[in-house]
Length: 116
Image (cartoon, rainbow, N blue to C red; front, side, top):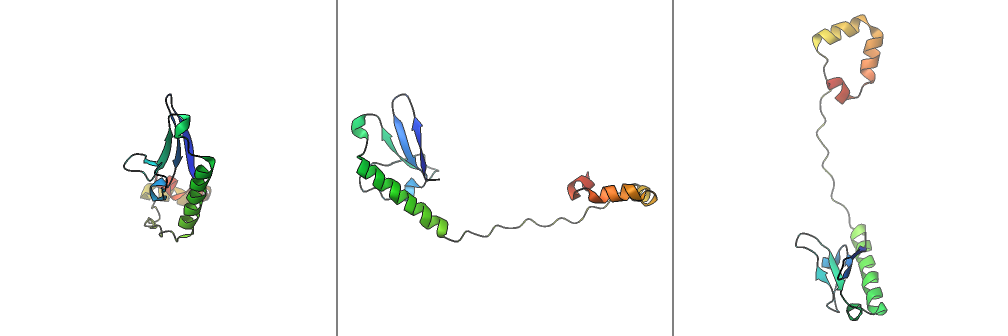
């Protein structure tokens, strides 16, 4: 995601998803919250609107930043510990031994359904 627009009664913003890491040679970016990496250009009047050349430059640099970060290797996700296969209660196991179709049906259930 590169960025987005937000419209309000008194202003509009053009935010960059990774704006915190984006160079800001024109000094036009404002941080969006403390916990996010977003930064935005706030426009309250047409005079606040950067030139097309400046805006185009910011968009191109934001796209290049995204591409460089996407090329970086991602951290390996931890795999959840595998749960042991569920064991049917003794009375259910005994009943399924007497009815093979019931055993076949039970065996097709997912492990979570078998636990239920």
